[in-house]
Length: 243
Image (cartoon, rainbow, N blue to C red; front, side, top):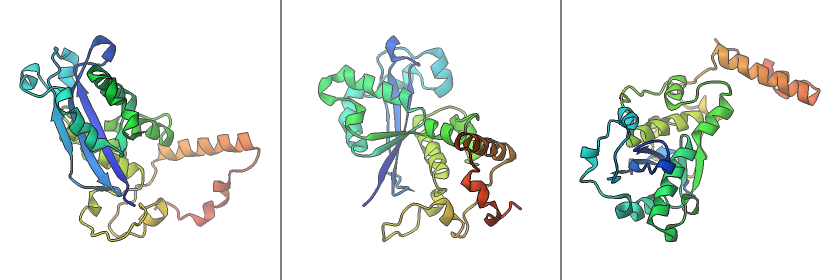
């Protein structure tokens, strides 16, 4: 059975829907069985209001550029059709989902909320679990996983969704664009840490000293809470040392 995920990002006129701020861009990147399909959804919107100077400085989108673009209500059904039954992958999902639900409420109760169409995975929360105490914004994750974000002088919904797709794949198993052209004829499970090393050409990213220290601190906490030695420390001799 195919697993369909949609990596999503938005740009807005400002930070708070309570002040009437609106979505001005949505970018979506489709993954099928963890492979980029290039079947994307991308749309700009006329928000019928001014854009905060601070927001425009981040994304570079002007009111003049958006003047002839459709309203959110004009294309909402195309958008909902694209994301329906997928797992949405969003960085800081509370922000984007809040804005999407705000737009849906403006149109009417008949459309419901985003949770009625798909599930949501927040990569910011995932990153905080994986890298506690570290910076987990998208730029920091790109640096940590060696993802090229050199084109990101300004934020853009589609570009950020494409970058987040690469980061998400690296965070959760390492399968990225390298596998795009493979002819897959079965329903193989995504690569795990144990299987990555058996695939020629895949780069293995070792923990740096800061990450190793954070891991040891976590194991110390487990030892204290359990009153016994953590099981991972009993198998260290079987793990190849870092060269």
